Image 1 (cartoon, one colour):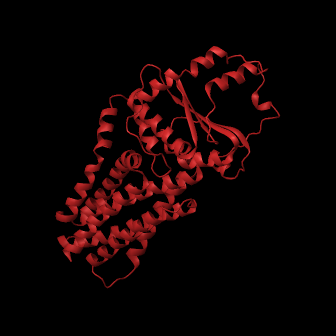
Image 2 (image 1 turned 45 degrees about the vertical axis):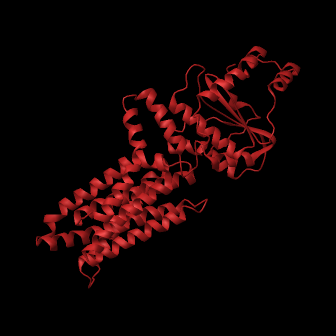
Image 3 (image 1 turned 135 degrees about the vertical axis):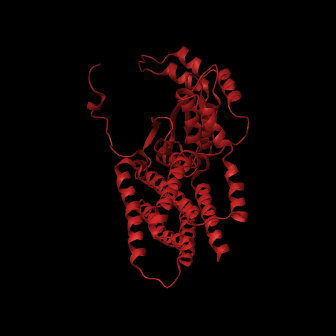
Length: 395
C-alpha cells in the first residue's frame, strides 16, 4: 500500500502534452481516460474539443472507449453545468458513433469507437462472471449507477434545444459554460454581470455599423482603435500558439517580446524613412495595411494545423503595424492643431494604451470565450474598417 504506482514496470510515462502525444501515436489503446480539470482555461479546453476527441478516436483499437467525467448531481443540475454537459455530449456524439453518460455526483461520459452500446444487463453479467477481486466495485453499486431512471432525470435537466453547439479549438463553447459554472461556485456576485455581458455582446455589431456609417474621428480615436486592434491580434496569437503547442507559459515572455520588438521596429523605421506623402495619406495607407493583415489571418485561420512559429509572425506583424502608425498619427495631429509633436504625443499614447486595456479585458475575457476565433477577428476587421472609413471620408 505504500509503494508508488510509478514504480510498477508495466507503467510507461510520457512527459509531454497529451494531444501532441496522440498525434504521433498509432491505434494502440483499449481505453483512454481523459483525466483533466474542467475547461475553465483555454489550455484545459483543448482536451474537450472535437479535435481532441478525433485524435482519441483515431488512437483507440476497435472496441475501445474514451472515458471522461464532469461534475454532476442527482438533485439539481445548475444551468451552467447543464450547458457544459450538453455541449460536451454533443461534441462527443459528433465524433463517436456511440456515447452514453452514467449520472451521479460525478457524471461519467463514455464514448465508444464502435457503433454499439453495451447493454446494462450485459455489463452486470460480465461483472458476475469475472474472477477478479474488487474492493470498491460491487453488484449493488453497478445497479445504482446503471439505473435508467437516473438517465431519464438527467436528460430532463439538460437544455431542451436539440443542438447546443460543438466545442472546437477555435470556438470554445465549453469554456464559456465552465467559466459560468466556476463563477457560480466561487464568485456568485460576478456571474449575473458576466452572463449579461455575454448575452448582449451582439450589441457591439450595430454600434460598429453606426460608427461606420455616421461616425467621425481623428488621430486620437484612430490611436484608440489601433491599440485595441493590435492587442486583440496579439491575444489571438497567444491563443493560436497555445492550441498548437499545448503549453503557453514557457513561450509567453517570448511571444510578448516579439510583439514589442515589432512595435519598436515599426516606430524606428517610420521615423527614419522619408516620404513625400503627407501624414494623412500615410495614415490612410497604414489603415489599409491593417485591414489587409487582419483579413490575411482570417483566411489563414481556416487552414487546420497551422504551425506554431506562424503565430510569432502574427504577433510581430501586429506590433509592427502599430509601431509604424503611431509616429505618423502624432505628426498628423500636430499639423492639424499647429502645435509641437510633444504636445499631442501624450494624449495619443494614452488613447493607444486605453485601447490595449479594452482589448485585454473585453476580447480576452469576453469575446474570445463567447465568439471564438473567427467572429472575434471579424469584429477586429470591422473595427479597423471604421477608422479607415474616417480617413477616406476626410480625403
